[in-house]
Image 1 (tube, rainbow, N blue to C red):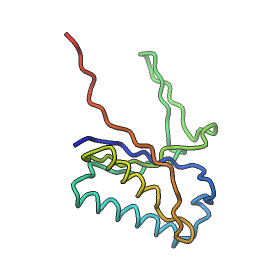
Image 2 (image 1 turned 45 degrees about the horizontal axis):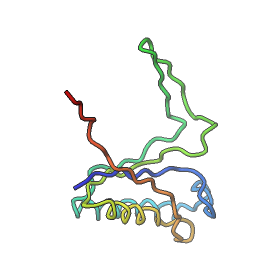
Image 3 (image 1 turned 180 degrees about the vertical axis):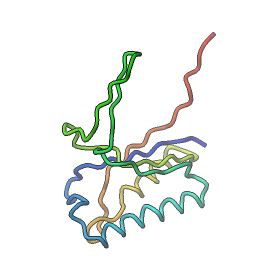
Length: 132
């Protein structure tokens, strides 16, 4: 088994109106789709964790030179996209991770049409090996 992180960014999607313009029924259908996908992956033993993240208005960027940290509050207007959530999965192959990402990408939007949301698929690597 190999772990992959499926990253869902919130931002403009070609041909798709912003979620803030969707009807409550369309938003509910989209959320229910996400829950159903999570249940299917859990039933298959493939999901490790999945979380939605707070919006950029609650984000903080922290920098430090080893002293007191400098904290900058969001939102960050230069950002057109932000990480909306993730799925951490443990699957047999990269091909399976891509299949799951494709399912997530096809979540319903307005009128039930698949939104074709870009999903970034990244293998989770273990800690670096230190040579002695």
